[in-house]
Amino acid sequence: MCAMKKIAAGSPVPRFLNLPGTLTAQEMNQALLDEFFPSRPCAPLPLILLPYSDSPELTKEDISSSLLKCSPSLAPGPDTISYSV
Image (cartoon, rainbow, N blue to C red; front, side, top):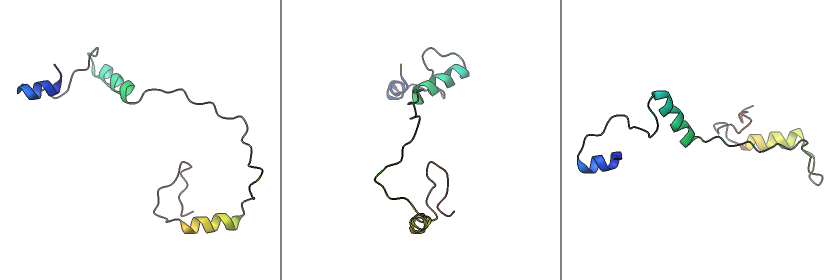
């Protein structure tokens, strides 16, 4: 019987729920990891990153002015470089 049915019926609910097919803590851990964090195959990365041919070249001044417009308290992006650099 699932935990919600036990609660509705007034039965005591175990502190740790049982997962079907698991007997040990390691098996429960792996079952939860597999359920909530399934492994996905990574998409292949392009071999060569080609620049946009029609875009103007960035200058140091362009980058500096853009960074000055950002708040230094913002979280860093995927490159983990903060805006205060």
